[in-house]
Image 1 (cartoon, rainbow, N blue to C red):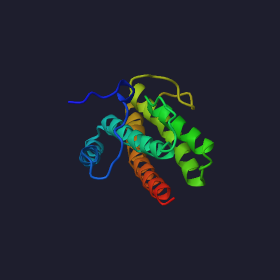
Image 2 (cartoon, helix red, strand yellow; image 1 turned 60 degrees about the vertical axis):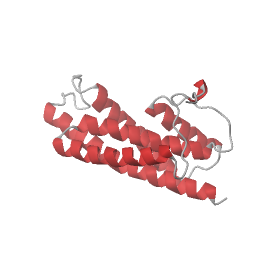
Image 3 (spheres, rainbow, N blue to C red; image 1 turned 45 degrees about the horizontal axis):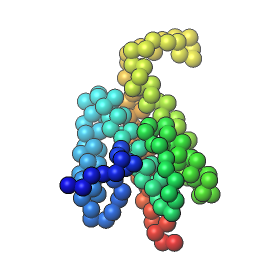
Image 4 (tube, rainbow, N blue to C red; image 1 turned 90 degrees about the horizontal axis):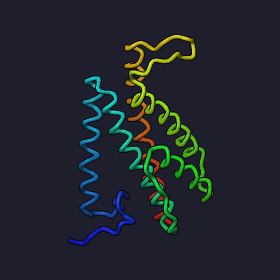
Length: 171
């Protein structure tokens, strides 16, 4: 068995038509989408949000790979935030910023904040902007909305990924 060079550890396996990694990725996406639907239906919103974060991050990294295809620059992409930052910087630096991907980056940043609240502040009690505390039903409602927005966002990022890959392959 061939060892993976250290610089490639914890990096996304590149997309290649018909490859074993793409077949696995396809299976994982199908199961992930199925699990997200089940989790939202059952009220397991944090689970849905975490799976969605993984899927969105994978799609964003795929876009970054497309933007990087002629570049050997290395990015340390170890969090959702650093991945969104890299996408923002690359689309600006490579002069491929569009209204569509600018809106998407803004949505990713907003969702990151909602995701952080759901993941890290479920039991954290603080005053909201009205000087009150969010009760349990309000927290569940917010997590449900975050999960639902994540589904929408994942689809939007997937569309962007497909469009950018098609555009670049047609050059």
